[in-house]
Length: 284
Ligand SMILES: Nc1ncnc(-c2cnn(Cc3cccc(F)c3)c2)c1Cl
Image (cartoon, rainbow, N blue to C red):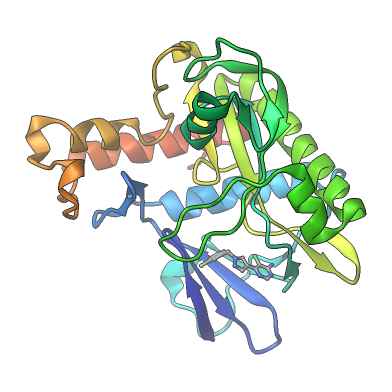
């Protein structure tokens, strides 16, 4: 099969029949670096979690999944972390929904009191829950670039008023359903990013959905506005990388060192925990 694109933690291939193959790697990224040390099973766990969400959301929006059968000629190690998907005409908008304020949204709020043109109440802090979830679309930055915030008017200019309204409605409903279910199971989904494409004039959910790579997952029992929240899955890696033990400085611009085995194991366990808590299924 033909290799089309490599993301930070996933690869995209084209199959002879014209369909695409998304392969999730066991890579993990932190401080804007893709680490050299893989987290065993991360690709498979997040692929299976995304497939579970696609099924649960089928009444909200159709999805691009065709099959999880490994195409002939694929490496056996891709089993369980490769998905055959229909090729869509992707809308060049990162459709983001936020239920909590942090990251780039917080930065924009501190500068202007608004995010993507949406004015927010005063006094919000890092990690504050928003009165209502908001649609905060961004452009798809080029490789190595940073996504730029878009106002809703920008989306209308790019996609037309009708499509813009559908993009927002679908994004908000996917977020509401995901955040509600996750919170019942002890996980805050602070925000999520989905990608939608057109197929025969119909909007179809592409990419991945409601994984810790496409969304911010926080442990609900640790939530405290006013400081940065712990990441459900990446906190062990982040803390170790900035601890004296790693000998690494994020400001140095150098590549991070390899992770010790106990950090890898603890991180793998968090992915298993997220899958089991959300799906109610055992990973074994
Ligand atoms: N169904 C689709 N039809 C057309 N294009 C896409 C598409 C293009 N790019 N991406 C992002 C991406 C997903 C995984 C691995 C990467 F390297 C990059 C998704 C999809 Cl999912």
